[in-house]
Length: 423
Image 1 (cartoon, rainbow, N blue to C red):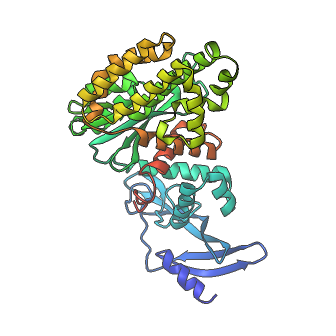
Image 2 (cartoon, rainbow, N blue to C red):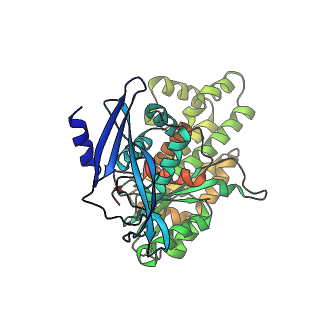
């Protein structure tokens, strides 16, 4: 223990150790410091100006990094002096104290914050023996301080998608769109760069106004779903950008239409054994790509298609939709899409597919951009799964600002890997 004071004194500049008390039964070590006589100068904790006449001092107990699994506390006296710049009595600045709380050292606060980046706050609090609410406040304050230094990176290709954030209504007449977050990701770095509340046009407008017109003009491609407000925002702010409907959402709406018509055929056209073979656990087989089915699934489909021409048409239409995305040019894709529409017309029972084809035909000018810029917002879908995991891990979030910062921390750049905490 003779080396302990010498080691600790190097971590706290301008102070020297005067006593060390070991409380083995209580599991902590108390280290007492006094200010070094060779460094009498004090600066203001607010503005950094040198302080003048003294107005007393007060004791402080500061928790620092554990020593050999023992909690460690530092005891010092902090001076109060008059600041000529603030015109008030201020406490002296202590560089080793955390910016988030005066009860922790900078190194210990960084370590606790690092734990909160990779684990739930409640688990980090349990592991370190701290109060969960104290840990939450520390994590929240730390992320807000990091956010003050956060800069949106240069971007050329982005993905835009929404994620369900909360169930509770804040206002009686609040629309459902307000309960979503708009997630903006960089397709090149595959990380979240911004989060806006709601999924209306103003949410994406906010992002474009923050980065400015010059950087908006540098954006070349925006991948998104068929949500019209996003497309309208891109058209208004990004003059050089091409809006691309991604494959994931298109196939999602198509498979929904196929499944609806499959359910109707099973209910009203099929009888007896055929009804059982086209519903329940077998329903997902009719939207699955043929080459991905195993031998048992292939035999099952052959039995259904053998004596039922409506399901045969449904199978042809489904496979034709996959072939559209394999087209080399937009012209080839258009020919296949028109042929798909003719097959839908040949059956009088495909109500959902007919409606889907007409709606998709109206937006063909947007869809054809896919064959020039083959990008997808599937990255956002993967990130959405991570966000849902983060929300489940915390059993939901009440503070939406904290939730937004936590998304940027886990899926973006608001963490110690990208934003250093030495400012």
